[in-house]
Image 1: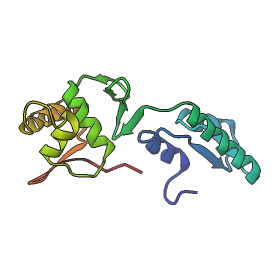
Image 2 (image 1 turned 90 degrees about the vertical axis):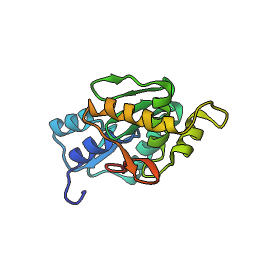
Image 3 (image 1 turned 180 degrees about the vertical axis):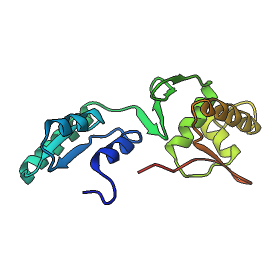
Length: 172
């Protein structure tokens, strides 16, 4: 039991942020509840009573599956990053970003809550040998925000006098 929240709402919230197995351990035995759990993104539904042996076996099976299927995705604040294809999407749309904009978003999203100066972002995304300067970061951030605002998203926060960070809100 989760204090103040049911498992379905918790699953709905966490599934937007993480890509890992979700197992329901529940006393609900109705078929409709089981279907709802799977529909919300649950990977397994274990009804009480159950044995620890069964629970361990099911968890081990899910962990084995995770090792076989490496994930190259990251979910942050309503956005899904495909780090192989270098794309960002919402549930409804594939968003269009330049290579630099994507790099900034990915770097910040991989380090939520951590503040980076323009110089740190420039070096991390474009490299030390890149031509140009860190003032380009502010322009990229402006363009990123414009594109994300169209999706009612605002995950990048300015820390005045320091730099930028990916908002840590809604992360577990």
